[in-house]
Length: 151
Image (cartoon, rainbow, N blue to C red; front, side, top):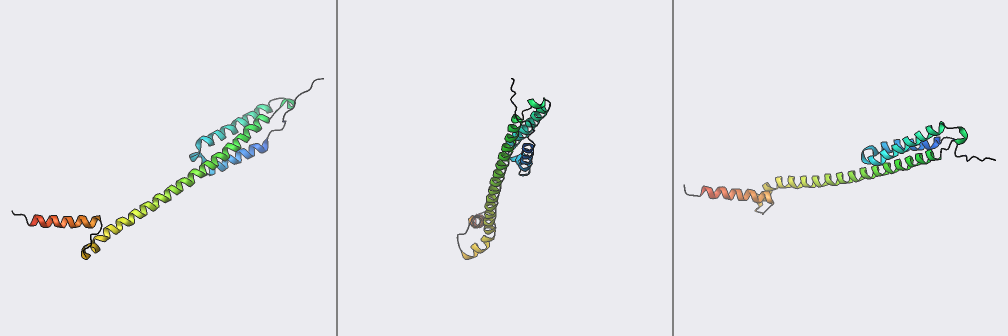
């Protein structure tokens, strides 16, 4: 008597849907730009899984085995999910860095505004003042000394 090993005979349609949804979710999260290698790998797993399903459909029904296709589609799902997570992490880091840089620039702008407005107040009060105050005082002294030079 001959026994035939029968594998999974129905195509893994739910695995295709899961992998496809995970790829769309990863793309929406920015994975095409911020996690491109993982995203491309997930697309490749999905493509190969679909090719394996097509290959198995071409076989006689008792010889069909969709286990390999199901494994590839599960890898596509897992890899797409990793790409989505990586993209979200990178975007979050970029937002933090951007906000930090923006705060630094706003602080620097405030210092410059204070320095530009400060000399008028600093000169009348006789205070040493900021660097712009000192530069202006030095310029006044140089101009006064040039006026006093003999011709």
